[in-house]
Image 1 (tube, helix red, strand yellow):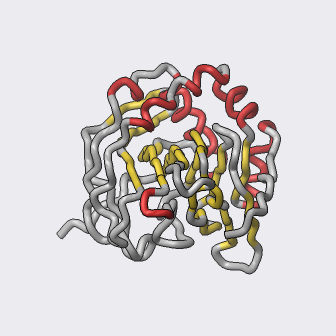
Image 2 (cartoon, rainbow, N blue to C red):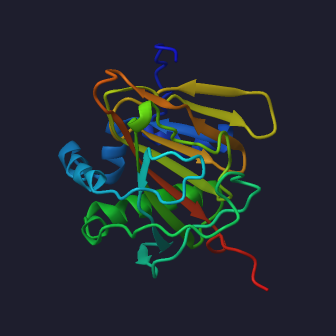
Length: 250
């Protein structure tokens, strides 16, 4: 695993929407996210303990035990943010050949996280980015806090490989990175040869992706010190027009 760490190609906050329209992806640094949300670094740092309490992912089909996660669903309509009844996460095989085609039930987001004042502010801000990319409309939002650890010597942030999610906008927010190497982010044109790679190292670096135009993956992580387990924590939020994904109704 290469020790080379490539810095993200950051975009200024005021150029974010244009970059998404022109290139299909953009990376915002932590200071930009804090400014966008009107938050201090301490405000978001206070979210870290929620990742310490994530339960194991019961659906990994590669036999691994390296992933912990929760799941929650919301509808954002203008300034309104509404949590919907807890539901399964579902993706078609077209987008997730490893874990698609069946309902995956995960434990719900902690009530206290959803009650954080910044939580609806973050969802509204992301919905505004989706509306700037497509058009203003209600957005069906799924939130996935992940912890990938190095139990067994390796952790795979995207065991399904390079993929799309079947949504309109994907946001990947780095929450923490402790004692690991690897975890390189790779973004490729869905219908072309261009691509880029970089490593998110600063907490609250935020990657935004136009899911129709690009595919993405993160490479495996390994511990820096084999005697000590490390982890990489992210918050992945997807926004989709016209409803949540689900199995076809008979």
